Length: 421
Ligand SMILES: [Zn+2]
Image (cartoon, rainbow, N blue to C red):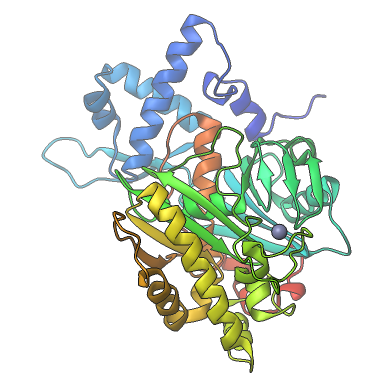
């Protein structure tokens, strides 16, 4: 007897679940467009959207709206919520993305750890596991870690977003100095392991998208710089990352910024790179790594000798920002990664160095830290990206709140102690 199809297999057979770019026959194309529209309206106003409001807002007939909702419920994407307060006639039933059906998987790849979290369609983090690496990782190791961490949700993963250091075309990590990768086929290998579509994002791009998830970002041009073991940048316009002609926009880590004879040698072998002076490893020493929490980073910054390197780093970042801001004239500059752990004093150093020697003709740009302060707050942007890329609609996913219910105690533990769960 054939096994019953999983939720993801059923979805794949519907016009909505087809590859967003796939050519369908005329009837299926129209159905897909209508399903996307209904889904978008439901996601934008969860719990208050009704069959009647869908018909009104999209000018579908009531019968069409009802049939679209029925299909979305049958696919496991939408659920009915409590009846709304009566406005005189029959009480309408509210609709929302199904909180108990599909999940989105968000993966963070680091040299020493693969972290996989699952987000429900109402924005809750339902599972989170950090899997420490034994040695240098490759795509198969990442796939095994993700498959292990998500085993309880097989067939329910709607889409996965992997954030990785390095240059990516969305499928493959073309090049990463930090991971030691060249043409690592992450998406292909992880897709085969978990049976769900995978989208790969550069880690700075992922954080920049996340920053956009906190607001509508309409009309905002933002320069985002991520400080960690590496240094990466991203430009977002209206909340969308500008990829560049070769998907390499924001690869600022190995641009030479120090030209003294004593310029430190970078991991890439060249002297005076941005990463060699302004990465957190350069400023805080080799004890720094990206798996540390903010309190641990703060403790490293308080060690003797750190102040001088933080000063040099702040100066180098300010110099870099001055050139980038002169070119882009952004509304604001946001420092992310673990930079917020360095506190207001560090931010003030960067601002002061930025404001010294102002360049004629350039406008000012406010510099601030990224809003996301916890791992959970960094999940929503990448989760939205995966959800929207899969279903072909810019869906709104609320920010996850706090730790996953069943693994709440894990967050307090050391990164290495978190077990796959
Ligand atoms: Zn370098």
